[in-house]
Image (cartoon, rainbow, N blue to C red; front, side):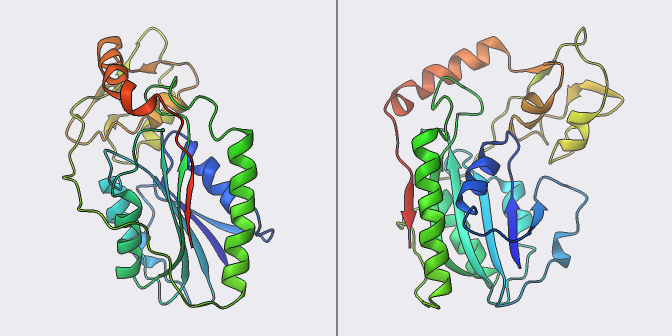
Length: 252
């Protein structure tokens, strides 16, 4: 069985993951790490399974809530493809951390990739990515990865080793425009940390919110946004590191 295990609040991670899985045409089992009511400790795999595990980069690390849920999985020798998706800044320790979590879970990490998607907070960085060139490349890599796995090669993939940077939370939350909010509850149900109150969606628990931008991207009325002042500061901080186009990286 081929499993797609993704944490993709704003959608970019899932798009990259889909292209990297494109060489496998059979039905794929989807495991959504955003789904906070799922029983992740009940997922147990076998050595015949292939699991593509994809997460976005949060300050150079695996998002803490995603890491906690991935650690509940039981690999039992299943082959894993580790994927870190970032907005053209830096992917830091994310790919290394994800690979180590998977190995500790009992997976064999046979391939790893760092790929680019449009920045979820400041969309002018890496706009439209994965673009046409990315898609061609990711689909080609999918074929290469599949060939490696079918060759029964046992050598695992090891992303570059780095010292872990300190993980930290972002003490900001999106805001809700009450004049636009229809109180449909979509943002509430898709929040991976249960940070938005259903009865009062303009209130967000700053201690729970991980600023994943999922509520902003999914709101059908555009009622969830980032404060302009915060957005301006984020763009300024990202400007130097995100200005030059980064390229995807594959480790086999």
